[in-house]
Image (cartoon, rainbow, N blue to C red):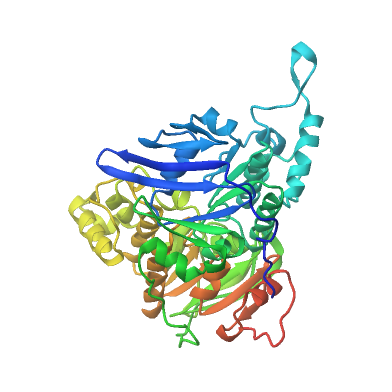
Length: 517
């Protein structure tokens, strides 16, 4: 499949925004040090760096949320010691944040125009819903949305909510749009639409700062790359030199050790077998799927294809409307999550903060929570046993924390994901389901998660990995199953792995010589 080059267009002109030697510290921690960068009209800048590299601090300074300790921001030749939020908006800087900031009780138009509503009725100042809709509809078309401006946000999927955020940024006549992990919740087709939106912004002379851990998206979209490491400018790459490996080396200061090509790995017997499973969201479509011990089966598909819904059935969250599930050849009745846990089926959910960890509980208690009876003596939970288990998992998974008594919210995204994994590993899983395992996680932490998944598979655990990241699906899977409208449209062996084959199956087409599992 051909990859579109989205960086073509007129040469960018002179910079209108200049960051001069910005520094920011929090007590003894130097979050940003002597950082300089320019932004010209219509250029796409990919900013890369591991979590904690200083990207968030830089964005907060640009957004007027915090003031730098030193340095300046120059806009159209006028220097400022720092921005307020109003200054940032006045300079034409708009943000699309990774964490969505929408109001569920409003429709799409109300969210896009929040604080800038269209009014009618003179002194009555009534909301003009028609004008709201007319103003927002072209923006939705621009981002490729298929829902209308009067759709309640509460009815939208996570991917659709991200589109609303992008439309909101476009509505503000921005000169610079900062996209912070905008594709972290978007599957393949929606990601393609967003990359097209970035190209449209570039052609319109609007600059884009694109922050993402999906480095292949930066390869395709950026005019240049700026890398941060430990709060400092680690270097940059012009368009002609942007490659995955060059970006990784700038980010972490070394070449990332890659796993050997997976090829055709030997796998064990079928651990989980599903036949004729019909989910509540796709009652007319049946799913047949076999998951072997020792393999990572990647599950790909477009948004709404039914991947997460299938995982919910396997984990006992939803009851199937029909079909059978067997574990190691024996019938399994997974009516509740308790049934699934007792059977050794565990889920690492997509939204770890909402469904994976209790952010205000200590790390140790998060790890022991699913299996309190094993940590109890005479009906009372033993803190000593909890800490022993947690310490073992911290060592095994390299969870980075000063103390296990810290709340889970103190951890980075990658380490929170390890805590979710730790609580299940302590219970000896048969089947582990990962739903978007590396969403919002930096490149170094991703490598650790992949290593852990591979070690688990090599120990005989059957792993089902749901992912919207094409690079991840192709790079981490032993086989790939692709879903289309609630059913499995095909399987791919390693020799058949390609973006084109995955996308063909995802839209319901067949590939030549496709081998069904």
